[in-house]
Amino acid sequence: MPKIACKCGHVMNIGSFDEDFAYDLISQNVLWDVIDIFSEKEEFTSEKFMDSFNQESIEVYECPYCKRLLIEESPRSNKFSFYKKEVE
Image (tube, rainbow, N blue to C red; front, side, top):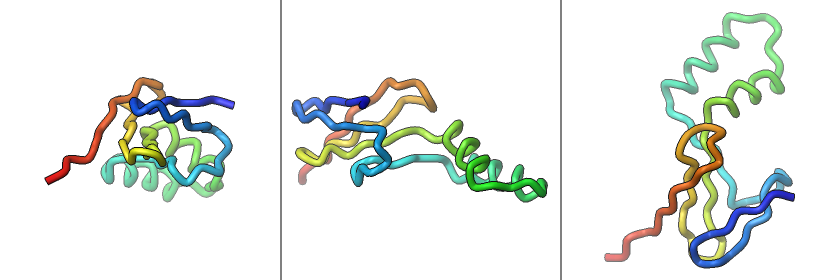
């Protein structure tokens, strides 16, 4: 099973579709483009929609330990930037 490590040292198991720390991020414009493609077709299936959605979205993980966000730099790049919440 694939894993990803946070900068705090916590290792997350990914790929089981059972993670509550995994998110998909997509711009509204791109989402509407994907929806428009399928609204014009009669052979819409959820599987085809999700394939198109996944091609355009980036993966985001929230570390359950430190709450840092790991955000993929571009779709399917498998390169992540790390973001930690600022404390005021």
